[in-house]
Amino acid sequence: MPAESLLLRVAQGLLACRFLIHGRMLIAPPDRVGEQPGMAYVRELRPSFVPWLTPGAAIGLMAVMASALGYRLARKEISNAVFNVVLLALSAWVTYGRLYLISS
Image (cartoon, rainbow, N blue to C red):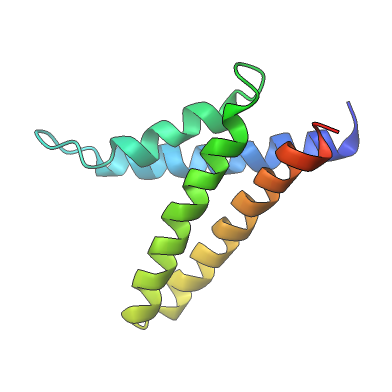
């Protein structure tokens, strides 16, 4: 396995774990607010299941992180905004890697 593929899998695993934990904390019946972030881990964790869905999931996570970043900056929560920037960059790297590095 090439090193870039291994690094992308590790990054996907980190994203998957982060969103799994976050989604599990947010699940609250009856409206089930936390299911979307919690289900993002399924696509990030198994890239071989349907390979073209992985970049789509990473793009969706980028949208979630960009929205969260805007929210954090509006509330002047700089320490949380830094964490959102890190997750946004990690999602962007997974998207780029799965679309251009691995598929080539």
